[in-house]
Image 1 (cartoon, rainbow, N blue to C red):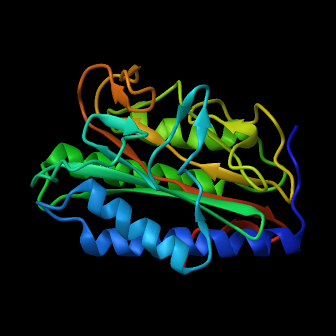
Image 2: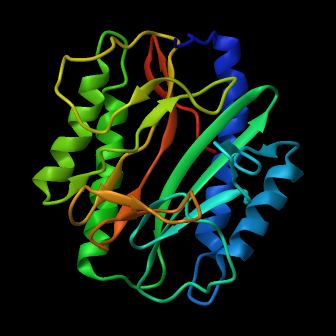
Length: 252
């Protein structure tokens, strides 16, 4: 069952979201060939804790698995939940960084995909299309619309550009818990699904593949990859639905 947030709660969530955005500014400055994802994780965790917050992903449990890092770092064919390591980034790769924060009893969540140096035309287009699909989805996050309007906006832009939408991973409600109802699908039909109401806060996060939409999971229980090995991109914002329209909380 979803929860509607008050204006006060949305302002508390904006504080968590701002820290997410600050971390992404640091990622933008530090992502380069030769940098390890473990180094990016340390930079992120140090900043989150310096702001009096906690990294929401570190220690997150899914079944018997506990996530060991502060960010998710997903390179090329990794769709989401890539675990930081001492592997160095290579020129031409793309890397999706997902950041979660917790402060004052509320969560913030946001992701971006970055180019490591110069990337090929397909990867550049994939990143731009995924970013555009998120912007179109956020524009549909208005009271009186439906979840299907958000999913349709993402799906139509992705497929018009020859890409596919991951079916098995979704966005979500967010607030006092990292993952709340409702699930936010990245595909669907306009006018269908749950009606959007003022006070809902959603983590909208298109995951778009350059090839087929199918995915598979690595033995570590977290790392999710494209089944055909082609690259994937991921953008995400935490968005409140207000009387004035969509309010993006994960901005500086």
